[in-house]
Length: 89
Image 1 (cartoon, rainbow, N blue to C red):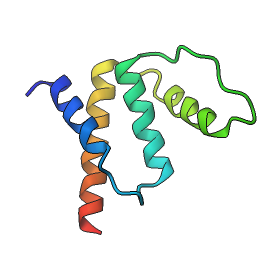
Image 2 (cartoon, rainbow, N blue to C red):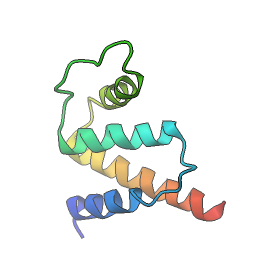
Image 3 (cartoon, rainbow, N blue to C red):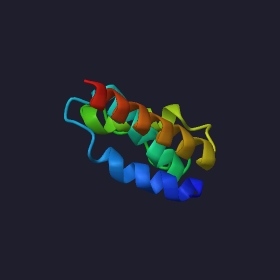
Image 4 (tube, rainbow, N blue to C red):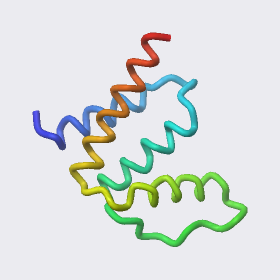
């Protein structure tokens, strides 16, 4: 299986992560997913009162230097880690 196929498979599995997954981990996944699928941040930072979108934008901006392949690989690793933690709990 290629990197893109495994990335897409893990993206589907990420949707089944438990509700108890921390917001911090969700933001990490969001940032890596956006970097892998869109690339460099291409929107202005949301305004001061839009806290949710600002946090998502910041998470994406934090991984801005990663290549598409690196972001996909890190995303796959993070989803697998979160799945293992959930099954061990």
